[in-house]
Image 1 (cartoon, rainbow, N blue to C red):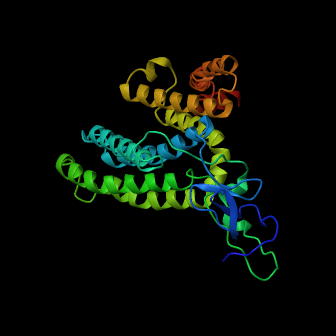
Image 2: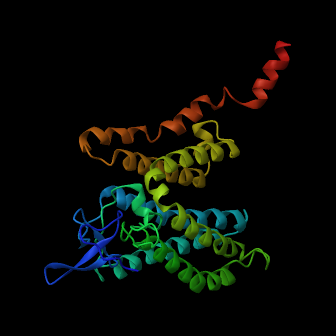
Length: 307
């Protein structure tokens, strides 16, 4: 519904179209890829995403890959040799999906995207800001004011799901012979659950995640590293390097630490922010240095001797 206005358009996101260089038409929703400027005129989004925006897209792209790896490891079993190939396939699915998503996003066929700059949290939830100029009729101006950060993630998840359904069942059926018939497809079944959850998470909480993902990465990577080292009973460097898998997990968490630090600092002042990356090994070193003091059996034995 459009409402004719004599002066400026009401609401935060309503605007008028430009026709032949002059402002024409009624106030309403701007076409996709455009948003209302300060003069309430629909303006084409021509900016490139900032580093923070790219890092947000990278975070949302990592979520399904990390979940794939977790469930593949969880259900593959200790004796299964198929886990590595499934890990590689999952990475291939997500990588191809990311490339295809970039290519189909405007400008089509290029590894770059044009976007509208995120200005405030409400940009993610324009459906909550439809004005009622006469307090009776609502002027619907719901649009993607953060184009394309909102929909590009959903498109990526759709490609990930399609590629997984095309590739993974055939692969698992061929290589996962050591697992039972009911177990071999469980990692795929898990993905059929977590993809809808990720989609709802992006649709409902995309704006909140955009402003909080930097801290989510740091907190989750620290917690999961501590849980893994505790569960694996890693209390010294000797325990850490005993298995290659432990080193892979450690370096993966270090990459996440670095990703979180870069996201927070945004490398605005490159020379000042770069030394912060030296903090990346800190949590693992601190854990190994203090693990022997917090060993439950030692605390219990000391308590018993004290009494």
